[in-house]
Length: 358
Image (cartoon, rainbow, N blue to C red):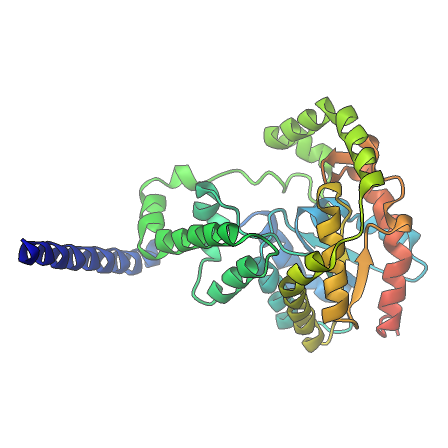
């Protein structure tokens, strides 16, 4: 009986190993047929930096909050110094993508610039996020450390980090066992989706025209309509929470320590390239205390790093108004201009104190 069980297990292991090797060989065999990927707004903004990074004084890198909340024209109009600004924000930006943007800047040889970045997003825990073109493009052995550093530096419960790690393992299995590549070759129409952010993108400064995005893409239009349907309730809730927010506890600041060290590492990469880093935190009521904890932790880990704190009164004044919001923590064009003008003076101060404009 026991001998039969061992025989069964041995055969199962051999079969599984053989299947994995066969799929891995299939992946290698199919790679020559894989077409270069156009990653939409991410590719467009990387190309813009590769071609003309030296044309700008200040470059913003980051997630959809950077993408929607930073209006370069607003900063330039309100700045008390000559300043040319580019918004290189990309919705859904994760750590390996942010690192790639920083590496792209390094490859251009551009120096003396102010590079402002916000906290990258963790990987999304769902099948579509694991298998989409962007995730698969950045699912490489070289990016593996960044992907897990992004997860395990989060001030989050262990179970959540473990779940995110599981999805990341799934992304690598999907790619390197040939499953994803085979499906794209056999069913190319399934993996091709329209780029919803490009129609409204200002090619000169990287800022998206929300009106064009809403007009050209039903997903974005639906998001805007849904927010408008609950805008009054949102504003009442936000104002109530604003009055109830308390400073972060020492435990929260300690929990953000690993994330702060990650921010410090990114800033050091920018400094090594001969540019000046700054870290920006956008105001968001739902994560207010966590964001303030991260700011405090970054101040401890990297006291020399300039921080643009969107929660400070001068910066956040008036932004908790439904008239300025596209949805939740993302501003509409009116709100983005207001916010951008409010930080213009600080941007100039940081830029000039770092030797920019001389």
